Image (cartoon, rainbow, N blue to C red; front, side, top):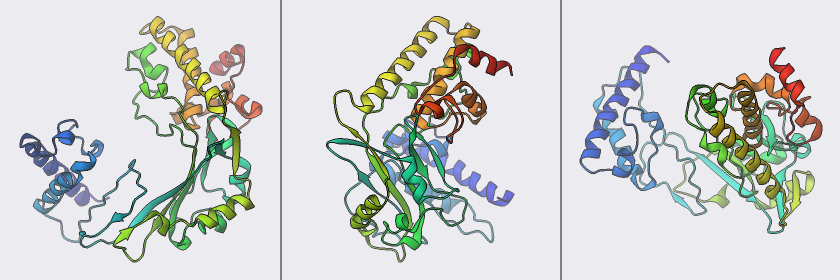
Length: 352
């Protein structure tokens, strides 16, 4: 990015902040603008029914700032976290340059809990994507295709699930778990509260509530349609053929002592231990409590996100047991589920 481009974008952001402040005082988009830090535009969370008001403010800011020679102003609008099974109208938009659709299908069962199998996913994917354990089970995985600009590294059988396979930009398979990571400035232990008094990471308290398996595609849509409907881009018969051809799913019977009930018990026990450590040792710098909290947090991060929250923890995560991103020669990899090395070996890992 050149300095001219950076200065222009910064000016638009500053102008948008001023316009938003005036709009908030005038009563426009109050549910959004009165609850966000107006000076941190990139972190705004816009309420669904106020999207158009905020977009209009952005357009005003773009129009008021002088565009440098040689640049073209394009607004990219994304809506994440809002799923709909209904048609979406694209009428009323002018000068659309490119449209991509994030479309997915959920595979679920009333009698079984379904998760993606490592062995099966490896059969339909290459080496450039990212595969990491799900719920800390070595044989269950989440997968995201490569985003390095090259052709995505998945098989034609997967791409053909989409009705326009040559336009697929991204593919992911994942269990419906709390896979969204928190934004943390301090990672360990208990997000820093024992050793430096930072706030506790409430995200680690989230429970795993259900197990359904989404398969999702990001696909470029040519030409730009007037209406987008889910069935336009996903072929259900081809999904059935894909599941018949490859062993992609690991089924667990739904019961009172189900897989997720057991996982919830394990996660809850670790969270309770973290809370007790926090209550007893906050701001003390106790070395034993710090080490135990660090080990517990690595385990929870492995369970919830399939990897440590901080890449700096990758090496120790392997040495003390939970493991890092891929299937490694660690305690968890050997046992197939979340495991820690014995205490004396963990202590040795910190000194070597």
